[in-house]
Image 1 (cartoon, rainbow, N blue to C red):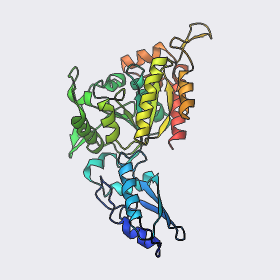
Image 2 (cartoon, rainbow, N blue to C red):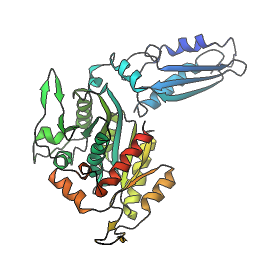
Image 3 (cartoon, one colour):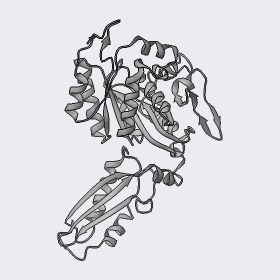
Image 4 (tube, rainbow, N blue to C red):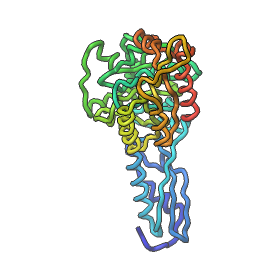
Length: 354
């Protein structure tokens, strides 16, 4: 940094920022309208710049922030600098992606991309994904599901889909069931075909699902992530411009421990945690109001409190939920007492991710 205060002006800072480019769009932040505000205290030599990211969960946000700070610090007279990050509105993003490269074409009209994650397998992450998507759709929100759990793509089974998508003008048309659009590797590979992919192939597949699938106008694209914090999860997380993530757990101690690690991963990547869903929360005994805590109790609430995020829903162990998933007719289609927690979840998502 220069120790010479000089004549520090917004124009000088803006000029220095013209050389900073968005790593994916390959255009300058100033040209793209991503520089939102420049505050200067010339007496102190202090500058604060606000940058509007295309998505709040942009995987390259730290690189952008560092390059902006470096550019500010190069201006004569700057002694202190700060970079604040915000994100574009859906309308701004749609206008911008009209100029964007083709690898973002498919999602240019998707307003929110929300991931469903878990620290381990077997906690009901895919069940939450399909029922949340259907609940959002039934509440008037256009919704799609991207099944990014490449090693266990169960979403088509749960949605009762066995067709394969077709192409049109270089784009894949997503399948649709119950008003929800759907894309999964399982619908491309065929039933029973193993999908053995690692980092580079996963990254390529995710970008194809974002850019080469004609998602159209969506309020929400719900992404079913791979379980855990391994290579596939990290690759998918870095490849998708997420607006936030919902973490699914069960009340038991071992699941809570795994979820803590998953939340640590998302915080490292600076992806907002929208809240916790406690699945298999309790079993309501037949012909009584009594409940049985098969996997313990209070784990999801303790986790939410520990990370200062909402507990979005507590979904009971209910045979109809399992049966609906096996039959390809998810419980949320019924809109009854057995599915009320999924609608509570959808309403909380709409409030928290608006």
